[in-house]
Image (cartoon, rainbow, N blue to C red; front, side):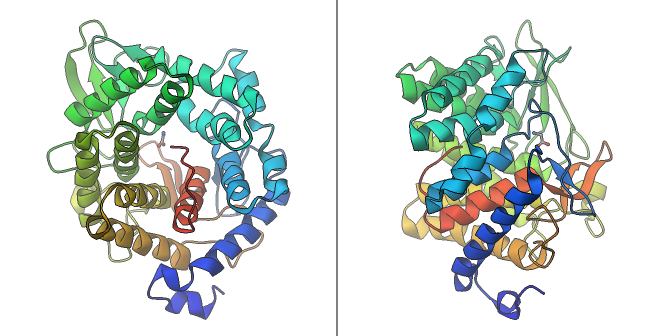
Length: 381
Ligand code: GLY
């Protein structure tokens, strides 16, 4: 049983140190359970699958380990995380599936490794990933192209989170080219992805020759005009990060607009459904997406950190409510054999893939957000 005290807690701050302790115990156990696996999805049995190193989710588990190492100084987290950027890099040397999401793969591995330890291979691998991502920029349409194959004019909101590797590279080598690309793409997010009411498009299609914006697609959301909650979270967190790197207030305003919409759509327990407009907006019975909740919570903390105390307070309070609910009602604390941290994530509902499962990126952003509340200052995204 989740301890009675946890269930009775009215505020996360009442139990935060205990949650942090429990998280360390959980991650220590996961190190033993996950050996050799590249975790992505765990179903009812609580056993994480093992994906390929070039899949976009390959770095969230080592990201958890690096955060744990950074927070505690304990060597076993660093040792378990150390080889991951080399393993992922190996996949770049053969036919592979890398695309717009290389930020998700090299920020929580190579970049954080270099930031914490000064490792030169981590630096090189991070810069290679930034070069690869910058090379996907379409100068006529001002967007980073999504995916591979024939989707030459497609851009997706998920890329908002990958911009951090471009900003990092610009700062690291003192070359603003990477920042210019990231800002241009971020401006496209402001113009073509974030709608007036703060909801967002998942996919926007451009003419790859002229750059003309053609139309939006539903993608992993219920419909082109719906509101996929993880896409909302990518935009919220991504634009808050973009403000941190640029100081340009337009990105912070955009992050706040998306946040206000996100918060207005939440059910009573503060954990997002997978799409805020699924089933005509009648969400009773629709699955949750705890990964959207944890990513949005971490992004809300980023917004709060960017604002004066009084203005930021409500974003922090909202993040804490979401994290308290995740902790009380969506955790695996009572199931030591379960290899994940959170339950009830939704990967891709329209495709019928990974519904009501544990998702490693949901686990990552939960750890990231809790670590921020515990004082973690180093930023990856
Ligand atoms: N980046 C893909 C997803 O959010 O599912």
